[in-house]
Image 1 (cartoon, one colour):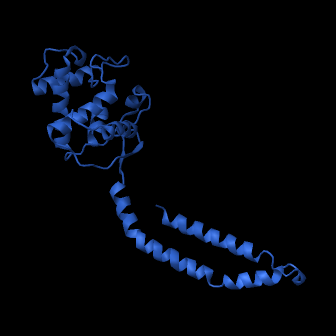
Image 2 (cartoon, one colour; image 1 turned 180 degrees about the vertical axis):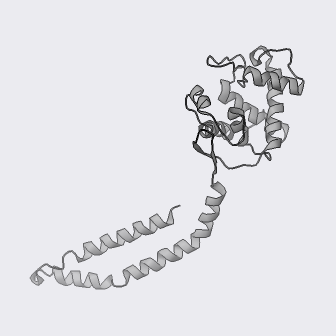
Image 3 (cartoon, rainbow, N blue to C red; image 1 turned 90 degrees about the vertical axis):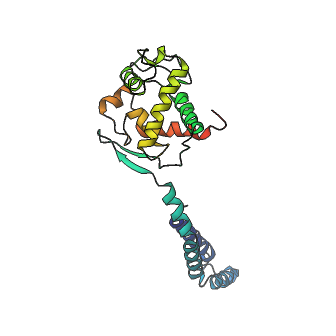
Length: 227
């Protein structure tokens, strides 16, 4: 809540009330309106002081609450190598167990391929439910010893794709203090800071790490139940 703006708005309203009340001060006394205005103006004496005291006390009362809320919601800023600035979401508590990992995978799969394990990106070698590019897929399968017989993600059965993706998610969480919000950033850019080159941005049609993360977290937060 913007208390300073509310204070200014209230003060402006007070000014308009005063102007309206005193607008008839130049009217001839014979009409009787001038005397009524004089009475009204007299009643408004001290109005500014009272309003100021009220707004100050209100701000002092709510300021700690507002400050605490703003601090808890403050985004962590990052700057990419291309010079762009992205306000990436602040950390939220991670569900480290299997159920938590499955929820993360469900959000990634929804974001990357609309849950299509046979998907193939026409602009790159990315394929499968999680859209692994071939080099990443081969590196991860070799590291985890899972699915090494498949040259790309699309060729692997859904269960194998899930296993490789789950291992990778667990690694990302372990390297980033179990911060769920870092998963989409690393998944999309390969680094926790969300840095992207101009070339990478062009290939991805200007989609920044911030926008990717925001859409992923929307999907993640909307999910419930078992996975």
